[in-house]
Image (cartoon, rainbow, N blue to C red; front, side, top):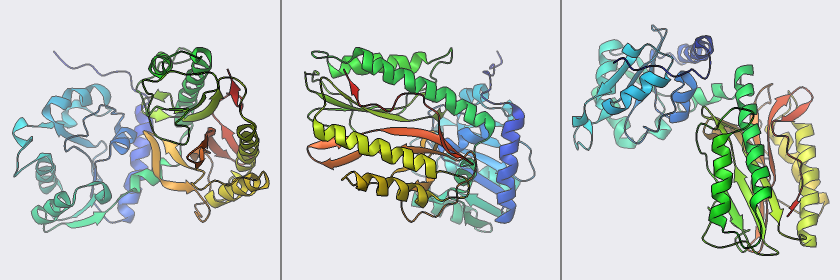
Length: 388
């Protein structure tokens, strides 16, 4: 029986538009084939979100072909046929003999294809994200070809979102809001952290406004006495009167995220936490005002840091980063000195988590898009220090 395609997250024209941008960059770099191996970039160019990146796979973009070709483990081929916009004939599954093989692996199948299609012409690799032995294999087996490092070439293109992508991130943001409201509803003294996490995550799956979550992204719940930590899960502990809870998570729609952070307190928050919250919110608003077309990432960080300092606090870590598919895009960073010029529909997680010392930590954030008038947040949740 033929494998059916699922409903595509975007129309075919959107994927072809993205591929056209990539091909322009390929021409600029004088390469005829680009081997896309990072899962987020594969999602961006094809719609594929299956978790098969633990073994070699590659989306091969050739200048001469309208659609890319995907080479993956044979057992993962049906998922690609189901999810990708491309013709099923362009999904090639390599045999199980290449799994756990000390001599040959899935990259050999990719190289075989490239040698047949482009021979000794230019081949681009996302080299930073490939093992050194794999890059050596490409250089040895495709010795006549010109191997070009194209790390983050696709990722920088992803940085400018289409209106369709913005709409998808708004859907993810609505789910983030729903998850945070569920946290405010269920967290109470005596409840296990694990049970609260289960309720919140269930909401992130059920979604919002009729749009379910399509995946689970990173989920962090840092509660008293662990509020100075930033990237840990729930524990077997229970919430108590006076507990502080720092939350960071995101709804997911077809790979797209809109992360959200908020701080909650069971009972009246301590005065120093309230002062820190007031300073962070003022800094957040200053940062959003600075997130205008034509400004820089550095401008946003400077605006936040200067405002926070006026309130008697400082933040050591950066203020945020480019965001989209699979959360972080490893390109533009909201820190002083990053002179990346802001363009309309760039999207960032304005991540204002502040872990001051081993006793004090606080979180708040907004995911936003750049506009001519400043940063436009996707989430609608109040910027409150939630008292439960």
